[in-house]
View 1 (spheres, rainbow, N blue to C red):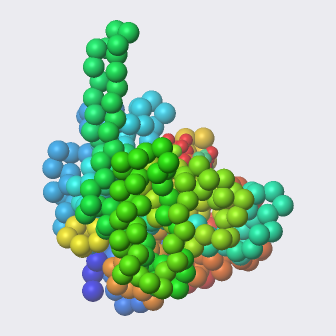
View 2 (tube, rainbow, N blue to C red):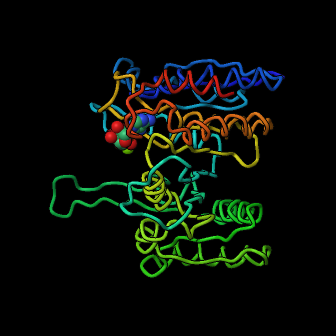
Length: 351
Ligand code: ATP
Ligand code: MG
């Protein structure tokens, strides 16, 4: 079996981590009797600066036939973030109906949480973030530039289909984990969208009598991610709230360099996309010290999504074994002094 993978390393440390992790993925595939065939696309802000676009006009058409997409990062100090987001990431997520964004937050053995004195137990939860609408629906406008009555409107869009889809995915995950679900809202202040969200959670919950549901306002959740992270299991949130909360989830579990994510089209009509949560990290570009493990974990989710669950598990376990081994190489974000390549080499020996 050959799986065709489009790799878009992107900007900053994106190419460093994606290109470094690729041989690890090829190794694991070979050992499990399949092939991952990567095609690399140099799309990103360099291209934008030279040609005025992050990807070609027919970019989505080009990607459509792949089995999955592996993305590094997009972002550049000289280009506003809304340009990079709206020209590459969001078109892929929206164009390919990747409505489910899955982001695990796990404090792995051998990794210290930066929460000082944290001894609250294992952190192991997963955030299901709505990924194609909500506050990032890109609807709105600006009027009367420069006048006193200048106004900007940014609308949030919550459809029944989109909301049910993410809520149901989260309930399925909670069922599989035999766990509980926390639904994040701001229903006290957003009486239309978030009350609608609550209503859908209520409706869908009737199909899942075994799953306990907790409702939490996003401000309280931000606090509780710090105060009692061990109590979360499956968390479901809108696009904006999920975006913010998953950065907290990534940092309390040790490093941005460890957090993976999956952007999934639940209908499997289009390729799903796998990417580390971190950005282009301009502060460490070119130093050869970017942590490749977030990409490795993302690749593990990718391989599992392709149906190769044993290979996915092997990748995941090699990375967690490495983290648990105090003698193993570590990048500086985890307090070590090794480089990206050392980590990758050690990982390959563990497969
Ligand atoms: P962008 O604008 O592309 O989102 P950013 O400036 O927000 O970039 P992030 O990539 O989100 O930066 O990273 C935030 C911090 O985490 C940076 O200080 C960066 O050095 C660190 N970091 C992120 N990813 C990694 C990684 N893979 N390995 C080591 N450190 C990382
Ligand atoms: Mg960022």
